[in-house]
Image (cartoon, rainbow, N blue to C red):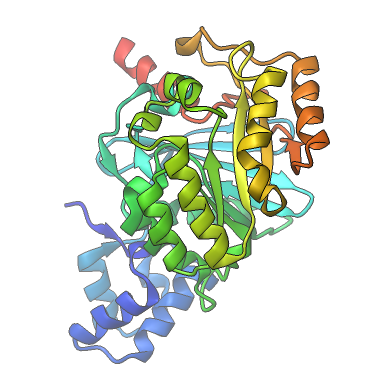
Length: 355
């Protein structure tokens, strides 16, 4: 029998659940600390929780619903985990080492329906959303791996940029953020968390109104509607003008910077013309955002796209800088493993189908 992940409950939800089942409020604090501070892997390890409560939790929840199917380690310390869910589906999670700490990129859906024509994540259509517990458990599995090392680092930063569109799984993604930020548990500050969206404008308004102080990143990848629609089908429903209006709302209400993600595709969106158009598009808000220029990781199934030449990347960067747009060329991680998001999962599924 499949059980829900205990990590799917926020502290308030756990407290309410235990109260509804006849236990006192302090039990929630005990259980929470065992989960997120001591990081037990079974309920029986919660030694100061009474046996009735332990039995109740064991009947209804599981601590471990993900198993490591494949783990790839890169020379730079990046680790890509391919996790198997209880229903057999596979998801990716990536741990990266930076000078400022350990960041983890989590997945929010099994597959993706956004349909970006260059992306490995969308090679397989979305079959379901992940529960909040399955998203939290990705962080916990990475942290448990770190706990086994001599230098016991803590996950310090989280990016919600893995497989799927986070804002298409809004409620579960929101509960995940609440668990992540809870000061009694993992206590990861909002300023160290970034959520990326392909541009679901209505959800950007809703996300803004939550006032979580979590960073927002926009997968833009093109400076005009004609080009963006060609490479990102979501632009048919939510054109750039509608997206920009939602970003204005975010900037006005939060006073936080926005990251614009821009993957450079050779001879597609990497000309000086597109750089000038991007500078024009962002001109009225250029001091309140920065552009992250991303080298493309080629995907076999999308052979029409190639990585931009270094000279083109530098020219694009220089054009933006001269126009006063804050930008950087993203440092690459894990280039000696399946670097593109969704690539490892796609390869493993194809391998299984061929057997």
